[in-house]
Length: 245
Image (cartoon, rainbow, N blue to C red; front, side):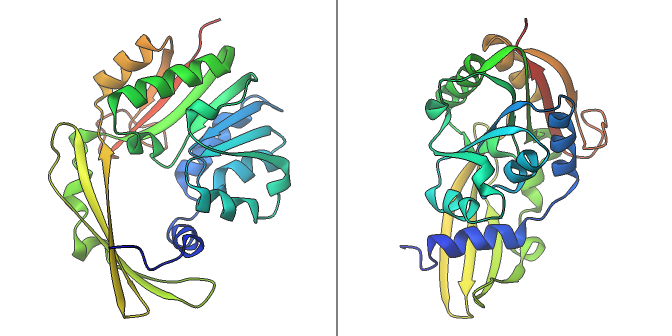
């Protein structure tokens, strides 16, 4: 089925459903550890974190493959202080960064192992010696997908243009490290559309091995946004790594 919502409405729906939270506080504090940094926000989406980093005095490049999300980001206050690029890690500009971040579990959207390896290699090349990387992904041992049921995820959002959108999710069990997820949307109590995607669930051991192969040193791996240990029940794998000097 071809989608009935416009790209601008889908970006607005994302913003309506996703607000500043503890993960944003964590990533902003991570970037702010070094004032006036050169920051790469890979998979920046509609720019919530990107714009906050720029407002904190950093020089920021935001990259995302979704043109509609970038269009929404470019319309927000402060957008002129960010360099926005439509693409993936292959489009990282020929410059050096002090910090790279991938927030909002965007790492899980890179489902192909080869693409994931290339992403880490591209980020490693773009970072200065001693440069830092932070990203989050969900711990597969927490089995978050078991809670992505229509009953648990049903929401009603009203977009800035007045459109009412009811959403819910359903997913299949994990197979080969991938979870297939379907998002349902009913627009103005009428048109029903569905969009299916996949998410990669990588274990702590996998992540450590992949980062090592890409040339990174892992500084910390947390299980929650308050610095909890992996397996603490928060369901996160929060990776802090660096490119050795």
